[in-house]
Amino acid sequence: MQLYNPERLRAPKEVVESASSEAMRMLRTIADNPENKIHFGGAATVYRLPGNLCMKLFEKRSITAAPGNPISVEAGYLELLTGFTVKGVRVPHYFGHITAEHEGEENAIIMEELHALDLERVIKKNAELPNGFSVKTFFDNIEWYIDALHQRGIVHGDIELRNIMIDKGGNGYVIDFGRAKRVSGLAERESRKLEDVDWETLKKARAKFDAWAQGTMAKVA
Ligand SMILES: Nc1ncnc2c1ncn2[C@@H]1O[C@H](COP(=O)(O)OP(=O)(O)O)[C@@H](O)[C@H]1O
Ligand SMILES: [Mg+2]
Image (cartoon, rainbow, N blue to C red; front, side, top):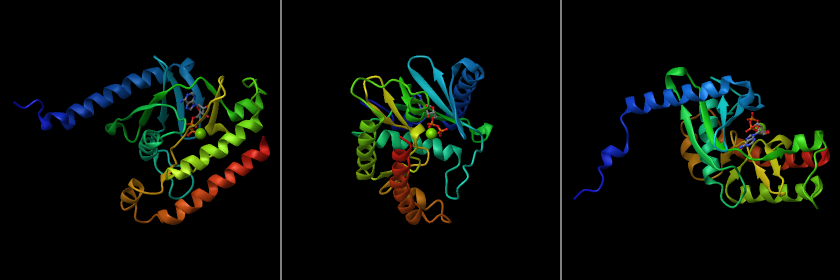
């Protein structure tokens, strides 16, 4: 007896396409309501979804300024993939990545909504931190987070105050993996697709960039 049919595990292309464009249409309706907006960024906007979830909706065909930066679909995919890979470092739970192909490069990642403030808001709003926590103690943790990511072969590539969040319990989270690079494994496989990009140099530069960004943030705090 065959308990499952491997061919049935992959839905036909038309089914996937119509389901994903339908899902994207629903997500668009949520995005149309300004009350659902959590944060507007450069290339993406974060919206609240029902059930403690949120989505990061990448703008169509958005290309970030620096050469070698991923286009929006790659950024979304990379973010999900890196989010799945990171172990032992607090990141939001990531649930999925939706692309509606016929609508260009529009795509979204679905993740847990953190009930947390990013450090930029903490500093600007002089927000109250949990007992015994100061931005300084938090920066000691950040150093640990960044080291831990590097040890797991992930260069974040976009360490800044807005990409570190802290919740009421004093837990820190690293977010925004849209420019992250795996230093080993998948990144190499992917890099072959993008021949004009010197990933090795870029990765080294990004590792340095993480350290540099960390230093810059410490000065601001
Ligand atoms: N999972 C989340 N839960 C709650 N707020 C979030 C979450 N992810 C992002 N945000 C908020 O949205 C902002 C932008 O998200 P981010 O992933 O950094 O996008 P961008 O690529 O535009 O910088 C963050 O600085 C943070 O304030
Ligand atoms: Mg960000």
